[in-house]
View 1: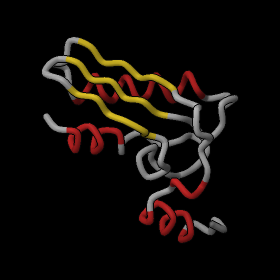
View 2 (view 1 turned 180 degrees about the horizontal axis):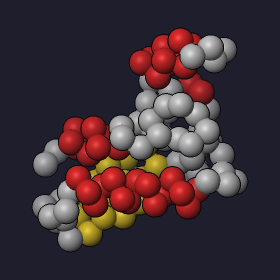
View 3 (view 1 turned 45 degrees about the vertical axis):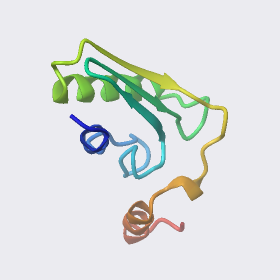
Length: 103
């Protein structure tokens, strides 16, 4: 299991309000992986996101499904640097533009 495996798993998780996965949105800040422990540090599009609990539950469910052998999986939120649209990946911007988003 590698960080790339974790990134690919996290690409299954979509923001409920923006039709893009949390990786391409630039919400995933750090992935820390040891033999039996995984920690994901991420942010949300806004610190007051009303869907925070839903997103965290979805991330945890996805990681547990993809990596059942891990003894510990945790997700931590970090709002020290506010999210903005410049953090969206090039692929993400292209997808949003195809959907008519002005970005």
